[in-house]
Length: 378
Image 1 (cartoon, rainbow, N blue to C red):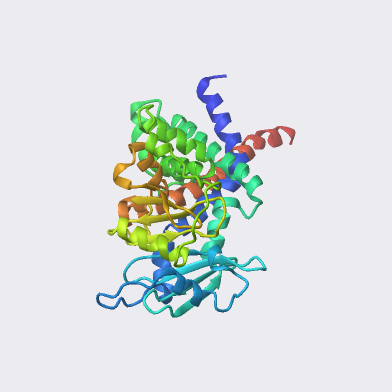
Image 2 (cartoon, rainbow, N blue to C red):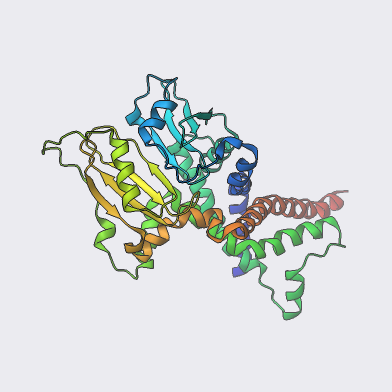
């Protein structure tokens, strides 16, 4: 069997095996790309008027206001996010009945603007389908991850099949023959659009795999660093439980917030993790630009005293670590702004169409191959 024919068989059967998952993951990815823009238009509580020279309230004030209706939830178990000037802050927690709840507040007055159960929120459902297909996490990791890995192989084998044998065939491989019969148009949609979207689709698929399998992301960072290791990137904050610690005089979330405000004054967005007392540090992340996750400073604090245990600033991170921090923004296209999101959206739509057009091609050839046998029998 010739090599190209073998590649074609591999392309066919891998596509049939993974097509449905690739279609769902790609379509939900396309929907999710513009979720921030759509939500800013449809959810007025995401924005507030920022008073002149007014500083946001401390996290403890926001936590108290958000949890007024949920006395069973401890403040130490919440996530607090400041999204920057002109945007509301949020307090996230899980209720006793398992409802993942997000409360939006005015960060300057602590007024509750809106709250919703993320289990029924449209974009939360879209994101969950995109990442897990609503399957248990242990199963979804391999079903989605395996299908996306197959999709990477599909893109590479598709390029091999697309490559024209003769020079005169090259022009038709770059254009869709719209005046032809629908089967030919479908064939061109699969081949031509697949070629144009292959490079972007490959980037989207790989960055998605990096989220599912963090060890892949660690490997990419190692390669990006030229095989070198940087000690500052490998340090993990630890709490010395043998040493007695004096509790912070003010709520721990306030201590953390005030420290990172002072240490990262240019940060617009601040995410504070749970600060419950225990063996694990309390973590906080600051981002230079709201709704962008690339330029990030990382902090770890003692869960009782609020003492800073570790700080990792964007400027001092290695090239590999900066690349890993960039992974989400690359995956959604927002690393290049609105233009990047449009490219990611179109590439995701084309990726969703490839299993459909490919299945139609296979079905047409399969039925075409059966016709001579029927005629011969007649």
